[in-house]
Image: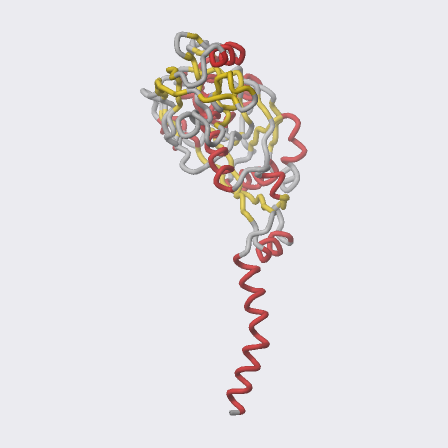
Length: 343
């Protein structure tokens, strides 16, 4: 009896600790941590017809970070870890749930690949056809567009109306009657994590009634001015489940080399981070301090970052890397060409 009583008391004492430990390990809290990820050789990710990837091996590196949704015990661990920054969920995912956030990140990566291709072709003086239209940002649940159109779709025609802007798209919908079926002509980029190919699709959608004015037609999309660039689908960039737009500059630098069949400087290995616009402008990104650590750990000693983020890049690595701020693709290429060594 005594032994049973002792065991029972032990159970009662231990139970709260077990519950707390289980909560600390398995319960997510509204915080994320950003820690160093990897520096990846872009020659292993990019495939350009008639270009030998081996020729550009260990030339340009992209960087990423590890993003972790924290539990109490992970928060405690990361709080005392070097090279790690903790942020409230609102600063990372905004109002999106984790699934939506993941889709947004993958969509941003797809856009970064497309922009990188356009910037590379433009730098080399090659023409890239472009089409203007209304870009779908989101669809409203329970409306005619829901389940048919997707974020990123470019609407180029509504019935017989050519769409080239937000205004022409709105006019095309408003000029139609509620309940009428219209044909939407759409350009949709491939959802593949590899291909830059696209499809031209046509959907017959029955328009609904505008909740604010039942006499007006309603489609149910949030949209903005959009433009699509028709790049050769034979160019492939494989990124798997890596998301976000920050590899844009690195992809562009690698594409310029492979498309021109000329390496910038065979003696230099360079890592780069920064968004890229179709005209070659470099934009700011997140996680720069952690990306610098990833670069240093990889053995690469030159790191290109957006101009305004040079100080951030030195947070954890100090002067261990040659860090250059760049605001454009041309400036980045000029810097690489001038470098004679990584020492």
